[in-house]
Image (tube, rainbow, N blue to C red; front, side, top):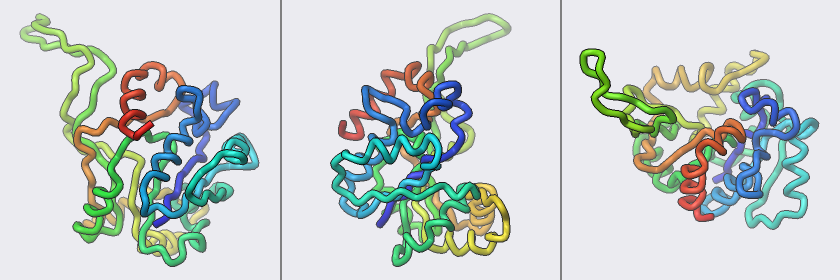
Length: 242
């Protein structure tokens, strides 16, 4: 199985930092964010190749330069962002996915020690075309209060709350049929994987949801987010084996 890392995007939530380096190169303890993702994917025996998609003609070139002399066990290849959306990017690498019945898709700003072996098993058991990592609870970044008749009875500082809906995370296992679905829309200039493809598959009940349970996850959208959640980031990195 191959893994695809989407490391493009404008990084608008990370400005002004992402005006100087891509989100994938956001530093965590002296190493870029993408390095943790690559090394974690590298730890799974069934991942035989890692494909990185980014705009290497712009700031994304920093990613390729970083790995020029870095020792990585698995084969890494770099593919120029097609500028045609997340779905368009997958269509762009169709030939690199030939012979693969499924592949991992990882958005680079997702930091999580997800068990990909269990996720893949779940994907197969559900006979799904796509599987998305989800969670039903999260730790809030602000304080909450229990209020009765306008009076605060108790404070709850950054509690873990149960979500009313499953939150979709940026880690997927996709079957080759997803590419077939994208090809049907190749006349569109921009193809969004979520809105144009997965939305339709959900109506057909072809998407499974793998709940990460107690595993922690963070959207590494900017250096400020990582700084504000240092303890959680360190815990996730430790769970990833680093």
